[in-house]
Amino acid sequence: MATASVEKPDVLTAQQAVAALEKSIPELKLVQDYTEANDPNHLLGRPGGYTSKAAFSDSRVSSADVEGLGKEAVERGGSVEVFKTAEEAKARAKYIETIAKSMPGATEYHYIAGGILVRVSNLLTPTQAQDYEAGAKSL
Image 1 (cartoon, rainbow, N blue to C red):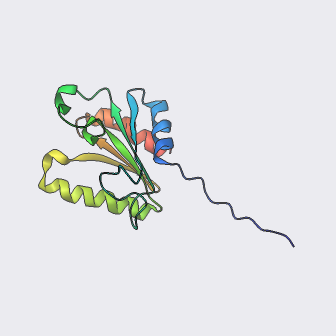
Image 2 (cartoon, rainbow, N blue to C red):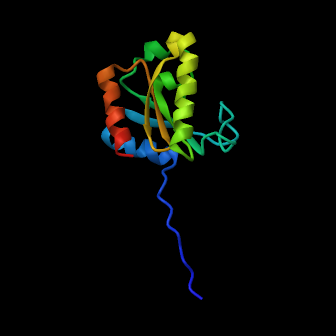
Image 3 (cartoon, helix red, strand yellow):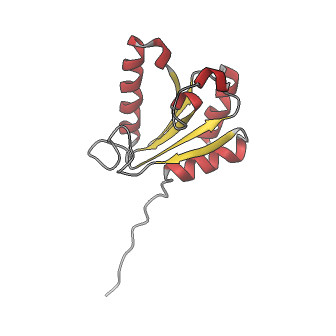
């Protein structure tokens, strides 16, 4: 009896995506790989939530601008959230954008590659953020 195998496309974890981005963005540094126990949004592994999440810092963000924020705050650089589908990643980005409309300081750049949502600090200039846009395209 022959066994047929079905190949699934390789899906990066958030930590792997951050490592891939770091190759082209030397200012980026992984600061937090989230687990179910320390996910502040309580979305990791839950229905409609992400399958993995990691936070990163970017040395181009001025420390004076993020004083008092935790090391994992999106404002310090950003985060990567990996979803099962592109639709789920898009829905999460839309949700964040909806919240940001009522809190202008909470805006951020979003780049989506398949089920991967790259969230980038609004404290980076548009030119600096383009590094993440280019990096997301290669994920």
